Amino acid sequence: ASELALSDVLGKALLLQRTLFTGSKEPNIAANDVAQQAVSQQNNNLQQEIDNLKTELDMRRNLASNSPTAILQRAQGRQEGSKIIFQGDPTPDRLKQLQSPKKED
Image (cartoon, rainbow, N blue to C red; front, side, top):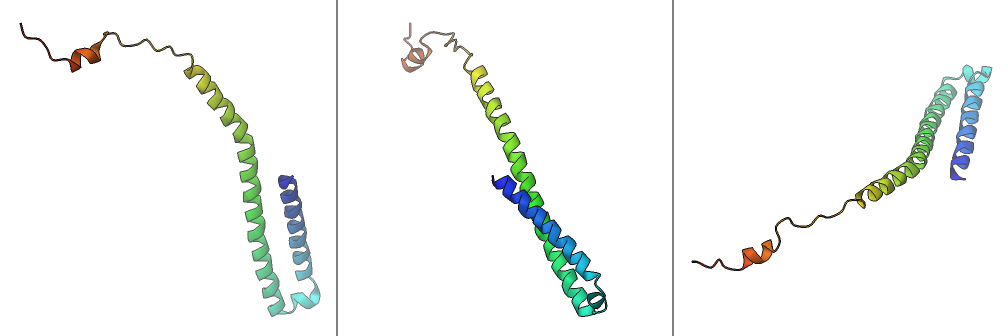
């Protein structure tokens, strides 16, 4: 749902940018340097916001697509790891032998 809302906001921002561009071509605005600078500044700000929205949308999509894959890979790793059988110590009672002092003959 949030991805859909973000896409909708991005579409509206692009429409607003087109409107600014079209308005800047209006003869009264085109003849006024102060108005042209204001439109240009607003367009730059809007472009930055659009870029931020695109980045956020891409990150959400990547996270959403990577999460199931990562979960499946972890589950497979745990499953493979659980198949290993512990063989035990090849030398029985090694700890007891180390802890008890050696008897001298």
